[in-house]
Length: 433
Image: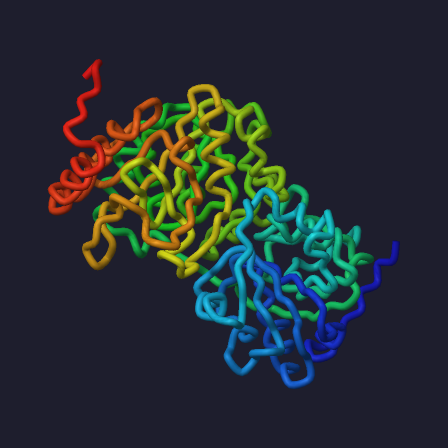
């Protein structure tokens, strides 16, 4: 294998991209920003370049209106920086489970011509690391006809399945810049802490946790300081996990899969997190197809899956990726872990949400908005938690579910929900109370 890297400047690196090709963009904290800005400068000479990615951080120059016709963002998850483009004729959204995105690449359903990745410098054996984001970047690199790398001295080297030998890299640019940082704890709301306390009371010692993105998962973690021997098997995590790892609350001792290790597919957080995972064998990064495989998830006992949503209707249908027909985010791994936790011994799938939106509207609604996508079906929902309590829906009929959900809605909306329940179910009384 060759150990030589073709080092070029950014403008030369992006010359490998041709019109009518499909390119992959590495995501989250590994977004290769320098390559993206260089590629955007070619907007007047390129046509119909399809861009696929999951979440990306920072500005997305390819989504600028001036790039219309040059780049089409066919996104597998909608992040804030491309939301306007995706909801216009400049982009589109592919609804797909995070666990199955790699299959789109490997089965040539979405074959990749050029993969842009953001990696660590090579080690003494010639291996770079995909760093903070192995998730769907691994299958993209494995299947792409060409790989262009942004090699960054500040990208942490992570353990697991994210190693790429330099012989796989066709061209690379060198940068030395900090990764984008996100501090979810700085945005915590009082309601998040209430939800966190309710969920913490549901978590037994020796449980294995999966946490979604945002304030509520971090609030849960802040409420777990007195727990013992917790484990982590999750598609992603942020700084809250590091605090519990460093204080010994998270030990991973009782996991069946990868005991002693925190398993994930990507991370987003602050420099504290990035420094902690660097060259640290306690953290194991893997492709999302493995991490989010229900058969793998369920092997661990007491799996606690914590996810959030945009709204939930009175029967338990969960919309987590859109506001009506407006595409807001994506399917992600919610269903992968909801099902995995449900099948785990003593597992608990939990849907957590503030009872109201920032505008005071109820998130527990009689019917989902017209055009809303159902990410998690009502047959998969077990626990729903708001700042007003916990509703257990599993095994309950539609009318019972409606009454349980009404109890944890904001008090100012309960009368309205009562009317909706009566209009739909009448004065139905379940025979066994």
